[in-house]
Image 1 (cartoon, rainbow, N blue to C red):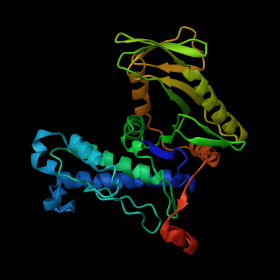
Image 2: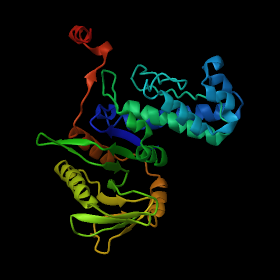
Image 3: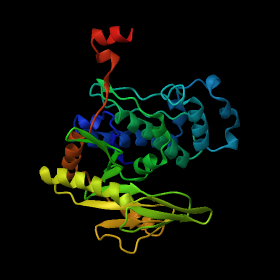
Image 4: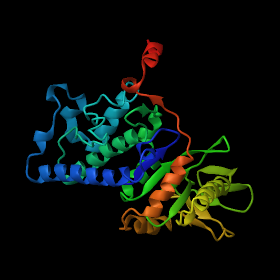
Length: 328
């Protein structure tokens, strides 16, 4: 599971110590998964549940009619406008003595190991959002859309633990905020990724002009701004910062289209086009990377985080009396 080290301009625990938290997360995740997996195989899984069965939501009575994933989705959507932290999936403890506790709670008894794995990953996803939006002393207010962001889940749930993700980070350069798309730091490369997706099997015609063309058999032809504009800006920022601080991590540019096709006869040599034909092979190669976290990778992450904008507020229990009086 890729690690979300920066989300928008939210405060992140990884900003505090990038050399500590990634390895700590991998260790804690492994401990928790072994705990749940072993409990499943030795028949003691139900003993880990701490909910009151008399207070379960309505869909518990008809669980045979829907999948575990859909039950989670329906239940969360029904409650997300109220709160994301008061659910039968109990909230993770905020911290242990180091502020890095990871205690995964599974809401319903899974019928097989695959359901357990999906539920576990869903809870890790929520935990990642917590680490990417809070520290012990400060927190940022997360836009609820990120809990349902399919692209964000794709990076966090489908890539190795040693991949560090910056998702729509906001860089502060010369006092001007610049938001970019996705930066993935693998142990061997830095990937600047621009998504280009629409309807299933849509075709995108690329060129060196300012606008590209989108075609689909059910829709009229449409022009849109070339993704190269934002992609080149993102790569320029990363490359300049890496050069300034002597980070020896190759920077690569990718236009990613998982559900359609890109036709770009004159594509630049330094841009990789990954569409429905070439994406699966690239994706499998990324997933099979077995390298551990590397020093240059962590150094590169530290440099990027140092130049990211952060917006946060003090937690009440860490604030001063003035903060409390202001709220009152």
